[in-house]
Amino acid sequence: GAGVSQSPSNKVTEKGKDVELRCDPISGHTALYWYRQSLGQGLEFLIYFQGNSAPDKSGLPSDRFSAERTGGSVSTLTIQRTQQEDSAVYLCASSLASSGGSYEQYFGPGTRLTVT
Amino acid sequence: GQNIDQPTEMTATEGAIVQINCTYQTSGFNGLFWYQQHAGEAPTFLSYNVLDGLEEKGRFSSFLSRSKGYSYLLLKELQMKDSASYLCAVRPNAGNMLTFGGGTRLMVKP
Image (cartoon, rainbow over all chains, first blue to last red; front, top):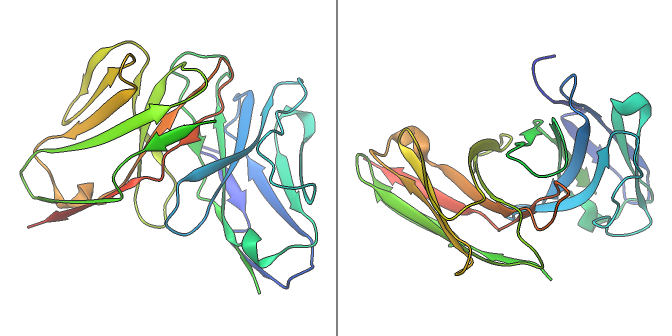
């Protein structure tokens, strides 16, 4: 596609359930990032993937959060045993590279997660 | 740690000029980005600075002073559609992970 796509656009789940969020990056982009944005807040880095290298997981808030990137393309962010504080918009971004330069990140529309 | 500060809200008049400031204290510095985010939409790239000075792109300009840990985004000839949040983000190291400020919500009034 022309841009980064994410699904679902909205997800409402009960506390304690697991959720999976999907991201399709721009074709040819080797770097993929996950951020989350709580209401009225800035973006919080979660994890990023660059090619076949081990992902940088330094931003994941707890071991309930994990992510995979299959075949260097599609990524899935999984949140286990969701808590109400996990409610946020989860944004995925991709870029051409991940080593300096003006490689801007292109963001997807996000998944709005609401934990009830 | 990483700390990026920008004003929470600003108001300006259509046709005027507005300057949005950003100060940062990060463990390293490898570039500063400005993004625009309309309500309910994804952030979109506006500008990139890695060297000191002013980068101009149409009605938008961005300035960087690395010694002062300071940047600003200048918007000229404001239009109603410029009402949005403006996010300052620093890339602390050679990887491409960005640390974002809380964003500045700009309201343009007629």
